[in-house]
Image (cartoon, rainbow, N blue to C red; front, side, top):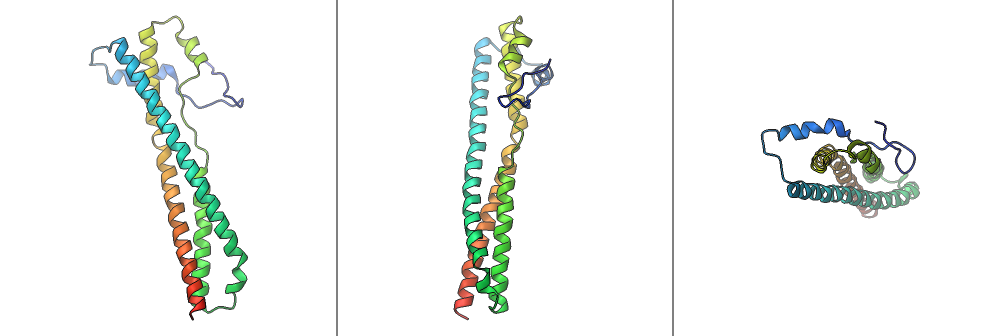
Length: 189
């Protein structure tokens, strides 16, 4: 069954409801949960999905702040390259090494902010079309299964962002320390 497009007209990645039964098969040996249990599970998974989404947004905010700061420092450094042209080899090497670290930090920032495809629960239209005539408990059980699958598939998204953000912060720190060191070596020959 085709899904309607997302807000911007593009098809959003989602989880196929009909394939979601494999999560329910994991629970095959257990008794069927009550309606209250299904509602609670659905609410908990919905809260966890919201937390996961806010975690990704927070990582993006941190990465964009670090990217802006690294870009400003890199711009200042590039603007002062001529001051290190006639300097002794050691301070000049440290300066240009710091310049490279800051440039690689910008690349890490771009990687941290690079868009990733987040799995989402199918649109309400898809749920209505697929489950309008079915039993409430069956629909709710499938919705819980779909939410669980989406959470499982999205859990690795933040790992890549965290890695890139840590690399960006480390490179910024190394570049900054290197700049201070190069300036100190230049001034106190």
